[in-house]
Image 1 (cartoon, rainbow, N blue to C red):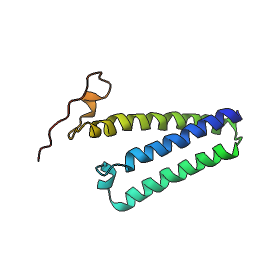
Image 2: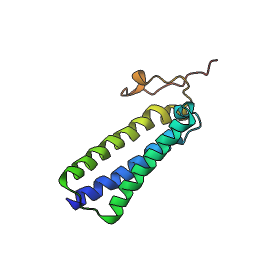
Image 3: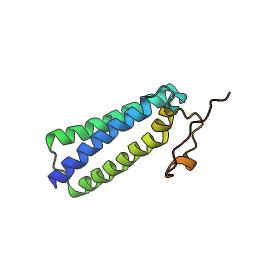
Length: 119
């Protein structure tokens, strides 16, 4: 069980870090439209979770089975969230999309065409 927890916490640490980069790493991120205190709470919350999973990874913690199951679930959830956020918001921004519509492009195999900026 210790190695399952190690792998889950390692994946969880990386997923938290990627999620933080994808959410807070762009100047046009919607998170910056929120009040400053909500942005700070999100940053601190994600950072504390990432530090906790990193500490579990470095110390090779051996928690009860229920916590291992929780860590595996969180690792899969935040890995999915990181990949989804990258595909939904980072890739279209890199391709020049302004008015990105998630429903039309996520899951489709067609290449998304950039939309022109309109005011």
